[in-house]
Length: 280
Image (cartoon, rainbow, N blue to C red; front, top):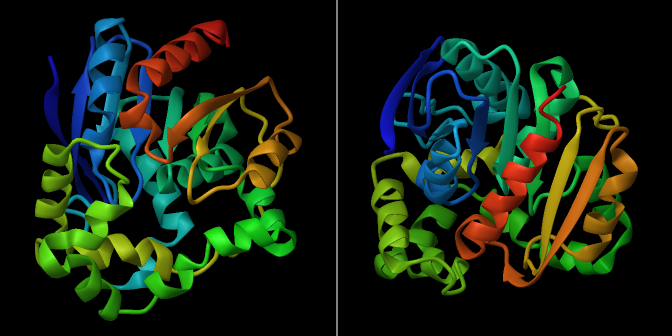
């Protein structure tokens, strides 16, 4: 049975969905753009039924209670700080961290800055930031895939375009791989005053000030061959950036929207990953 939580932090209160026993092995799942915690509802419910304590928050800007106006307040330092603050409020000293899309980037940086807090790391779609930066510099394919980033950093114009005609531009992002009812819910939330701007502020906050090193947390990385945002160069080079137990899984003929399009397969991988490192 999925629960709805409000998790208070110094930054504000995060809305979240959760399932599983309070004393279950803790799992925090981070969503990406332009989604919300419900992108993980299959994983939360299934992991909870297996005895894990799974929690997926609506992240900064997506939770109405944590929606600052200044783009600078969406920097990677603030986003990582939210992860730690949420875990602290839940009473979790060490936990499994899972992220997709932007949530994957936050997960990588959290593992870099707080490796002692994580039992395992799972990144879905998003390669290690070091591998991604290399691909952006050297790989023409990745440069083409990432061309949208410049456009999305343009204020106001992007919001208007994305929400025009009933949010048709956002609907097309999902490539008909996510249920229309769920996309309707994402659009309902993003149509709230300031919500889409807050979500786009993740792109507008600027690059991280520091450099990221090799990950020292046991890591599962899941990449799909039909991902439009992340090409094979960064995906295949991610293993070079992990100095710990590492598992790479490639989903054939699956789009960027792995948590929803391949929900059962991904959930099985997560449970295997968590169980394999249970002794840590």
